[in-house]
Length: 411
Image (cartoon, rainbow, N blue to C red):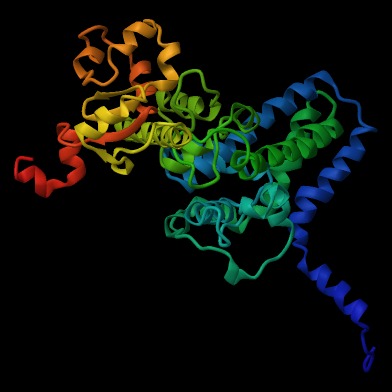
């Protein structure tokens, strides 16, 4: 009514209502909920179950092989018949048009883990899984990506313009018509239609959530994407997400023969049938370098937690006379110009107390390095923890410690 003043409570409620993205909420929450309720009143027949599973994989590939690897990343090229199939099946997955889906996904790769990432996992698993689709956000907050190549495709433009009817037909009507051939259109609508696209949606959403939370990071740990077989099983091979974010234009997500990636296998098989071509793979040398660098990074981190002895640069310099004087009360020896305190190890030496005593007060370099016994790597590592000084004039170690200037003088 004109002149009516709304209370703050009413205004807040109206604003809350406007923050909801109702189109997405209907498609991924309300309709699936209705499908779950209807399933209690709709018996699941054998052929309907088989059809629902088959259609699940077909529409799943529409997303993984189509929306994701073909259109978002251009990881391979496809002939028109296959493009039509993938566009139709992607529409049947009820996750938006190719253009909308790919634009968001490219922005995700460009702004991973930042505020401009559409499904930034730093905002929580619920947000990255599906929360980002249920609310309206300020457009200026969203990252943008170039999609001129998609806008140039007549097929992508057509699917985007007519997405609503396409999603309705391939999401519910088509699976119902197929099931009607054995007299179960209702079961087809509920199981092969609504519940099937609900499971495809949730599986795909796991790539945005679980694949950034669960698993290992064999190629890079600076950002959140991870590899895990469980996520791969759920998402038709999209779970090797750490690899994917490092090498997004590779048509594979899994590179090992024993990793589960049916999307990769499908693209490869289509290539044998002449339906796909120009399958892109990143250079094996670069992949191995990335893997090795990450392994080295982990080793370096672990190395920092171990005792490698006092750095040579931090040790005091002892003259030979100071060394000899201290040996009267301490079990010291010199090896490669470094003074070591053997006191705590005398009784533990595998060769016996008498043998190690022969090294006290002497330069035992030759003795330690094969003169008496060619000591193991473990012995060298243990010896480094016994450092207590550097011998003045003790060879290269002392020259290094005193600096390059002295070295040039021949000291």
